[in-house]
Image 1 (cartoon, helix red, strand yellow):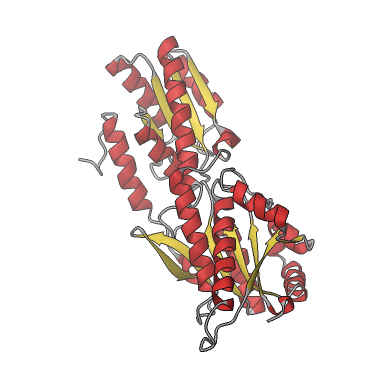
Image 2 (cartoon, rainbow, N blue to C red):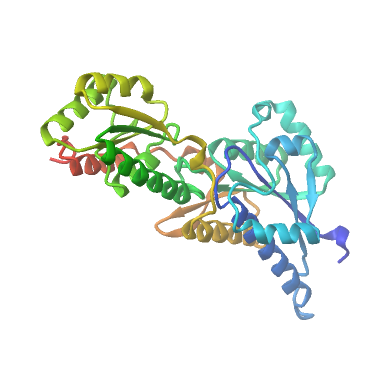
Length: 354
């Protein structure tokens, strides 16, 4: 088999970056390389002589549209190795709203065919997966989605690549915020990322022994939140309070001023922001990302050509048809139950924890 006969697989990272994306790339590349070597050394009785080549697509779907393809040379082999110790994504990412247009996708499909790409792997969240599903349907190409987002908002997977690292970053910062809050007897309102998903806030509040948490699942309106904090601060005579809220719920600066007016306690707001995205991936994220990469690469070696998403369910990796993955319903009752348990740690009784 000549180099021109290699089965070329494209890989891209799209949307917000997440620690562990580089580990996925490493897992895919090294597995495809090993499979190619094993096939070339197989005995004369073996019919599988296929060789695979991974092609890097820079800057997500935007880079695909602009034909930013990178073959893996000696320099990139070294970078793929080093990337496993780095956060972010070595091949870059972008948000590309134009990909929603059919004409834009048609051009991307034409480019993939021109580059002789036979399969596509996309690492990202629901938006990335939605785009991948359309590419799969409109081109007939085998596509594999890998959930990579710190928000943990891909319903078909219990955990996404990057979530654990972001969670550790938040907990580390909450510990520091608690220390300064104790020193000055302050109330601190801390906003985490998560978009519509409260997993980061809920898990962090429990892990960092915070006093209160508010997410979309709890539906605590602003006046109720302020009243809760006032009651907890007054009745329990806390030296400090740390309250964690998910982004887009409140104007935390305004809420902090209102709480200070009600409690007469110095109150500050902290928006953790982009710091939650960066950093070297945790051991859990490295392992999960690598195994998802291996899973995706091996999928191209079997006879099943269907397009799938990789998910973690019941502590094992599973293949889920892309459309089924996108249609997996949210389970707000699961987060509501967790939220009730976290609130009970603060002495707050709800119907769910009575």
